[in-house]
Image (cartoon, rainbow over all chains, first blue to last red; front, side, top):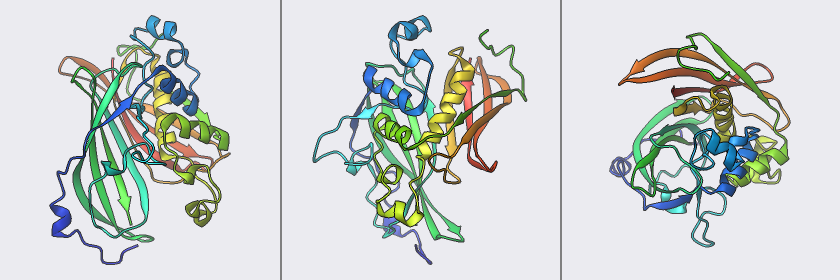
Length: 163
Length: 137
């Protein structure tokens, strides 16, 4: 928690930073695992024939699912579904972290068999006062997911709250 | 019968979706999403101990909003945009309900669109996850 947290010039200079790209696989098994994890009963997300009858080329990714990053021991994060270097290098000194919000905009249908390459960007930094948590830093990021055909399939905007 | 842009109208309520995820469901979601933050399955994790319990992934509620709209849509259109904000924590073995309504029906650049106001409500009726979905028919 910070009482008088301020966004420094050094932090301002990081706005616009872009991460190295990383690949997310959308496979039949990963689509089924996500659908099962949420609790879907719609067979379109599990059975390829049903998906094709509904007009999809393969099992479609359920809303909010953008594939699973390829896991490499020692390189990938052990806990979170994105690489350790996907977050902007900010020296804010804050230790508390909360998920503030998520927005996903889709431009292409995402199906099993797709590989999406993701690049994360620091879009903006803001502060907000909280009675319980003091001055919070709101970090807004924008992750662009490009498919194997070079088309932008989705953009995911997220707010991370640091306090 | 599948829904259509012509048939829906502003103010229409979409069928609600109730969930009461236990630890096993949250573990399944962790595996499916790749989010293994221990705060969502490990009662001995320091942050779980500080809160007094593990908590439901915010993105599980985000995904539930997606499921609720997907069930209503029945593949008659596609979700163009889906967003939500995480305003309050939800806990395992406690029921929450995803609700939604058609807020706006419009045409833009030749596309037939509908904007839905969506949210999840906990057992006390508190809106913990307000959101917005744009559907293209």
